[in-house]
Image (cartoon, helix red, strand yellow):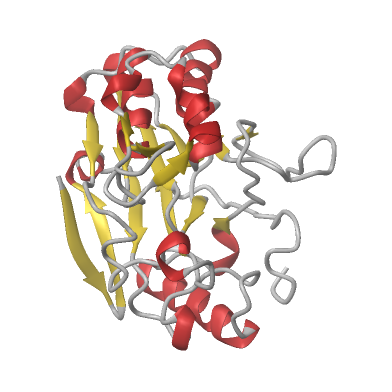
Length: 284
C-alpha cells in the first residue's frame, strides 16, 4: 500500500512494504512543495527541461532539508532508457569506468547515499534486500522495460550478492498507467515475445494501436525472478491522469518537469558523493 505524507512543504508517497525496514529512508515524491512555476510547478528537480536553474537548485535544497539528507548525498545519473546498472562500492570515490555515466539503475550497499530516479511517466522501482541490506533504484521507461531491466537488477542481486528472492522487497511507484499509455505497433512488437504479455499488452481502441501496462510488466519481471507476490507493492497511480500530483511528459505534451524517487540506507558511515555528469553544474 502507498500512503501520501508530507515533510515541510514536500508531499510524497511511501510504500508500507518498504516502511517495514527501519534501516531505510525512501520517497516517491510528487510535484508539490517546490519553488518552480508554470509548466514546472512546483518541485521540479531537473535542470535539463528548461526550468530556471535557481529554482531547481532551491527545490533540491527544500528536498534536502525535508529529509535531513545533505544535498550532495542525492545521486542522480543520466538516464538513457537502456538496461545498464551502476554498482556503487561501499566506500571510496566512484566514477563509471569508461567515463560515460549513462545508466538506468543503481545498486549499492553504501550508507547515507540517496540513489535517485527522475520520472515524468516512466516507472520508478525501488528495491531492498531486508536481510543483506542492499538497495537498488530502477528507471523503467518502455524501452528499459522491454529490455527487462528490473529482472536484470534482481538477477544481479542474486548472482553477485547471493540475495534470496524471499528477502527482496520491491515498490513500483507512480507512472503512466495502462489507461493512458497508447503505443504504435512497432513499439508493441517489443513486448509481444515477453512471457505473460497478455497481462500487460492489450489491443487499443484505434487501428494499429496498443495499450501497455508498464507497472504490470515490471511486476511480472519481479515474479518471474521468484519474488513473492506479497513482497511487491504497486502504487496504482497514473502520472498522466494525476497531473495535479505528478509531472507527466505525455500528458503535458512534452514540456514539464521531473519528480524524484529515492531510497537510502541509513547509517553513520561518512559518505563522500561525487556527482556524476553535469546534472548539477552549480553545486559540484
